[in-house]
Image 1: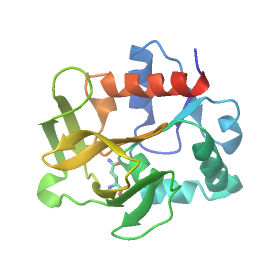
Image 2: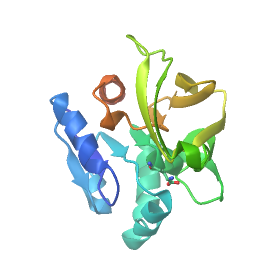
Image 3: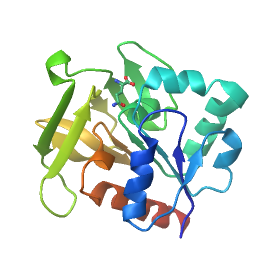
Image 4: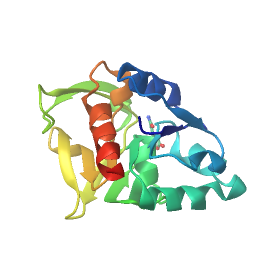
Length: 191
Ligand code: GLN
């Protein structure tokens, strides 16, 4: 089995660990940069991206995470997707830049703070049920970025090589297709 980490500084890391456990995949909770060593892939959970950025300021964690993300599969959800994006709006803020998208934070407005919606997906099987919590919107994506699911017409699940990002929370639903895809990406990268 590959070695998967979940960034466990803040936010929804426990639900990701539980989703991986559903698939028989153990994981390591990453709280310090040294814990990245030896991992084959990393999940960056939802939470609050500004808080995550502040917690990454110590021990050169941000720079080490950047280096890790350039070389390994990473899956970010919501705030994790914001951290991965090349460009962040509302307001602009630093990011790892490992995914060629522009995201706008909290883009769906107050009425939409928390919403469950079904959307079209290219993943095999039925439409995806998606939980959105103060979600960012992917405003634009580079030519290398594939869209794998949509909310109305906006991309909400995107992939670029071994990087995967969701603006919703697949770890909070019952459907494990998105986590399974990430494990497949990790296996493909390792071989
Ligand atoms: N609104 C949060 C942010 O801007 C993301 C919300 C989430 O991760 N559920 O970081």
